[in-house]
Picture (cartoon, rainbow, N blue to C red):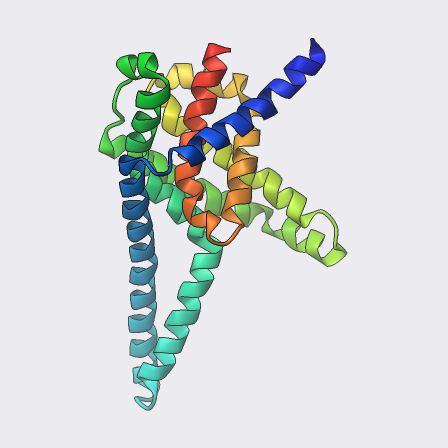
Amino acid sequence: MRNRAGHAIPCRMFRALALSVAQLNDPVIRRVLVQSLALTLAVFAGLGILVWWGTRALLATWSGAYSGEIASVVAVLATLLALWLLFRAVAILVVGVFADAVVETVEAKHYPAALASARAVPFHQAMIMGLRSGLRFVVVNLVVLPVYIALLVTGVGAPILFFAVNAWLLGRDLGEMVAARHMDAAAMRGWRKATGGPRFLLGLAATALFVVPVLNILAPILGAAMATHLFHGGRKG
């Protein structure tokens, strides 16, 4: 009995991943993928333009010579650094805006009874959830940064801590995208307390996707789809 219960959550996780990958070719999910990726890249492009403009203006006050060229180099480097450090935060924020479409598409195919009682998440609520998610990621990782650095110096544990922290964050963020369609705030608090283990594994899988080049592009969409399967699979079980 214990063995069966112990294996239930990982089995649900693999099932959720397999079903999510299989549905990537759905027209709605393809459209959301393109829209969210385009908006994410637009955010970073806008950041690069702001850095270029600010650097050029600053250099021009000292010397006009080569200010445009230097500003371009600084802007490219700053944008690449931001992509590396903040891609997860911005991607989850952006996909939060489109998450309802992904969750609804998965529910329509696999959980039609749940879809019938679901409520659409208003745009402003999706934006607030996305902003909270991005802010939590930045603040928590900044708070833990000294520990990351200390563990890197000693050569032990930094990747483990990184995965643990971000699995906790992502599990909450992705789970709430689905739960918000089916629960009020009070019910969601109880649901969070009762589903720590499954959400942590969900976050762990999503974090792993985010650190793999190319797959990180699919990570937010796959994460939202997997969260839908885990939410409804857990309720059924």
